[in-house]
Image (cartoon, rainbow, N blue to C red; front, side):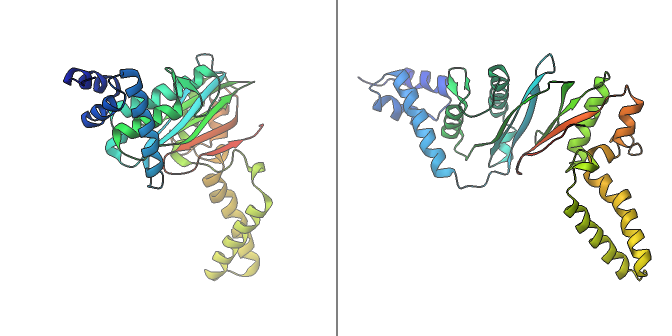
Length: 280
């Protein structure tokens, strides 16, 4: 059947795909709009495979938490350019995906959102945007005790969620900010493998010796630097709270309603997902 300009316009409005792609899909589908939509989706998936090797250093990391604070979903969707990551349609797609996972109670690209799987949404987006787009991480979190609190950085590239057992949600949220601001590697000192501490001790001792310190003094300096510098850089509860950069996180929590952080997760665009899960 002949393809009219109105048909092409309608398909474009439904899919946001380029005009020529819409026309070709309609011709292949013999004017069947639904079939044409499927064709565009299939071509988007094929295009995604071709672009899969291209670097994705931009994108959005986002966490959403259920109203009761007992579950949350997190996602990282990466693309090639910041032009795309700042696009309102791209942002809306990521929002739908992460909220869809929260509603479904699970993570994964097989989660169905608005009648399509997340994988199919990505294929459609690749077909429209013509960039490599990848779901780098999709996670679902639960809290059997306490509640989940999150922070999404304003640039969209970092997001965090913490499990907080106290009564002052604002204090817990400030710790979530700390996770993004200072990117800890461990929740508490006890979580650090001994070999990591030994390696740091040897590094700091060598540094002190190179500064001309005697062997016994170099060892004491190394211990002091681990306690003062290394732990504050790498351990969430030992870090200084972002609010004043003076008070340790563990002390800040004690001074603001008590409670503790029992686990944290950090999502970052352009990097692998980082997480630490420990019982306090």
